[in-house]
Length: 337
Image 1 (cartoon, rainbow, N blue to C red):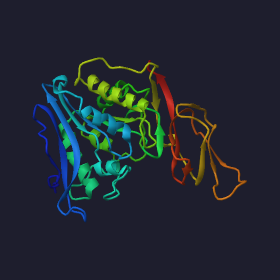
Image 2 (tube, rainbow, N blue to C red):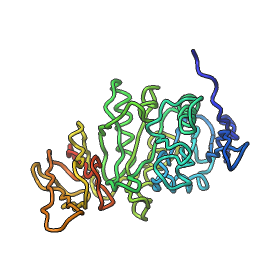
Image 3 (cartoon, rainbow, N blue to C red):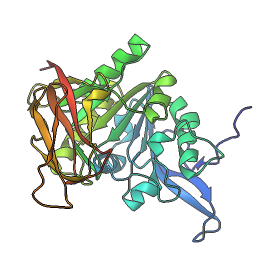
């Protein structure tokens, strides 16, 4: 049985030439608003012939590099500079972004674990369904901007995935490299089935993701990498004129071949990391210590690297609980300079 149409409506005309700012409107009824709506800002910029790029941020509401860069882009990108169509959604999960949380305060939903979504589901599932069945089919390529949020800090990289279609994989990897972050990553996902990434790739579209910092904030450096990367992405795929601007230092290509890249805690306590982001890691090296906070005089539990590589991500808060990822180690494949 086919699904009913999405309850979300757009106040923009996706086929109109020029610049439009509007909303994706999802009707809701709450104690605070009986006939209300979730309002998700959207900008559409269309001019001439060319592909359609979908630029998204705020898939998680506490990842600010992408949200900020795309909000800035919506007020600066001119129609006469675009070849094709650019659809910008700075805050996919607007309720989470407004609350400054990873997940939605309306239903606890993690948007990037809710795809392909459901038009009859909760608010988060309805948003996922709209992207799956309305926005993704419109586009040729997607750039989904992530960072570590409040609980992780991550080296800046553009990422793609191993795909069954070699040409689709090649285009995504070239897009990830062209983003121009200091690192490019072939990324392994722990739970790929319900990701936005998987929905886009299953429809045959080119998908590039990023990780661009974290800690629940942004910095001048992380925003500079993000803004340059968004522009590079649009230039690389022919939507803007210009030259792709690469970092001053040679770009490093990383690989996450399997789940052993993720170091997850089997203890709760106070975390001491022995390495900084981007540092070289040797297999067997102590990368973290966790101290029992319930008593003094107790030796810490040591965590050692199961592989060599670089420290690509780390837990940001010092307090850690069982099951938390405390570090991610990626293998260095090549320098792309």
